[in-house]
Length: 196
Length: 89
Length: 97
Image (cartoon, rainbow over all chains, first blue to last red; front, side, top):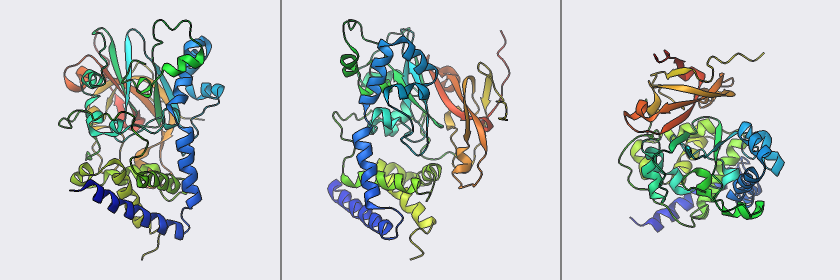
């Protein structure tokens, strides 16, 4: 089967559907473009990284973030209101005892505003099926090996909450400012498939 | 009845395929499908739960053979037809 | 007045072994299993009802429920937390000390 041919067939199907919906006045081309512009310009792991760096440098912010992330985010000009309706955000903190990792086993729930569009592996059956059953084997495929005495907690976002992992601040970063710290944080760190 | 999407704890899906530097969308049509769905939910044509339901109602073999955004396209086409958004034609 | 939540943090709950025909957000791997309530997430429209286009979906408390891997898979040292609407749950007996 030719992937390219299948892909062009589906592209034609999408174009026809879009044309019919626009012609019927159900959606507008400008509306679709605006949705994509907002997604591609606004939704990024840079947002989650900023939240993380602030939490590392401001204990009061960290306390507010872990207690009620929705009311703490506006301190950084962020919010969970970008979707259809405001979503509850729960930030879960990695410690020397606990490592957190996120999944949605039923579909692909993900905090897009804070982490950007989700990677394909996050939406794959392989990840969704395995991470709740044997998280350490999944983390190992990302090159993340945790000490045996660390408890792994897997958060399956099956309802209206979205999750973000607060990674541990790396050792040897005492001299770094908030912006430099934010540059250390990766998308995988915020999902929990990397240490930071 | 458990549906095909309910994969937590199932075996047989193999190793992860991690794509370094992956773009948000792999083709323009995927982006258009994303935007269409968002617009149709915002416009009240259907709810996000009805959309998830339409994805899950796919025949299991078809679901597993389809890419992520092909599933979305299937669900949108299903709901647009069921709601008669484009009339009966 | 909001209805009081049926379950408190720390309480043991069992996921009902229900197997509905339609859309639901209780994953199969926790059905019939017992976990512990971590916290209440407030009240949210029930996804099962909203998926049918119901004009007035039931609104229920959603709970974060933690399950030890051994309870779900018979082995493992990790923990899995799942977000579950109240009608998915029933009270479970407390573990004997």
